[in-house]
Image (cartoon, rainbow, N blue to C red; front, side, top):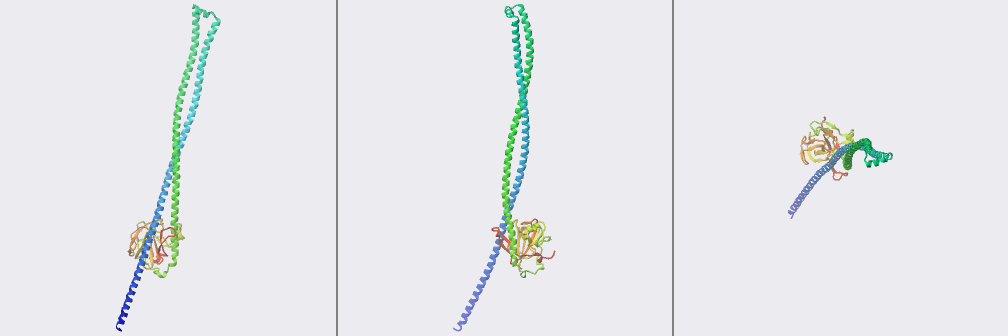
Length: 432
């Protein structure tokens, strides 16, 4: 029994040892699983940020294109309306001119009708005069020589002579009256012909005037339709502009939130946990660095508008689009995102495992993926002008690793924002 007790104790000790090892292993496995889960969550968050901002940017860009299209449409319609106005004015002028001519012709017709009436009256009077002369003549002859009728009846030679004289006088007077009447009739016919010509001209002008009025009515109707189209286009433009304003407001709110988040991260900045300044730990992200914007407080109006609070959290190096971008140091890619027209645009984040994370923004293309290990100087993308940018450049930020995070925006649902407490990248770069 004495010999069995130590063995029992030994077996019990062994069991405790293995239990401890198993428990410790489980704890390590759990820790690793937790870190993996956190890393995956951060990656998922990064993807969500890129997707949300890219979607928001696409919407703004699409509506901006629509507004531009509506502006062109309005300009085109305005030109057409101006053309229609010119045509309408010309037609109105032609209508007035033809109306004046018609009025003048109406006056001529009125005058001619008056002359024709006068001549017709004259002809009738001439006929009456001739008839009256003949009646008077015969009445006088009968009174002066009562035997004329008897002689006429008897048929004597005196009666024949008298008849000849009477016939000569009557013929002479009748001829003169007839000539006068014929002249008047000819003049009347001339006036009638002239009246017919004037009336025909008036009819042609009246037809042309009616045609012009119809054309003018068509132009007025077309102009009204164009004006309605302009009003509809302006209403649509106003709607799109309002949408763009709302989307841009969301973008500004995101930028403001980034500044607020980074400001809140300042307390997490512990220099004792960071590599020593002035160690040239990193290389420049471009082969031939040209510094276009420094770190810290900015002075330009655009920079003050772009960086809320007037603080720039990195260095900008300008060059042409497509210039290769290199990793400042060796590490692991912990984020590859696309903010569209906002903030950093297309960006890459690298964890260097020394307490620092570098961020590269405004790329035109990323050439690495999340989780990839990169060496210092490894090409990670190409320079561009994506995001909130006015020209091709690379934005290079250095964050304290313990402060770097990707968080969901409180201003715009579903938008994820990379943020952290930044330090001046010059502290870890060689002097230019």
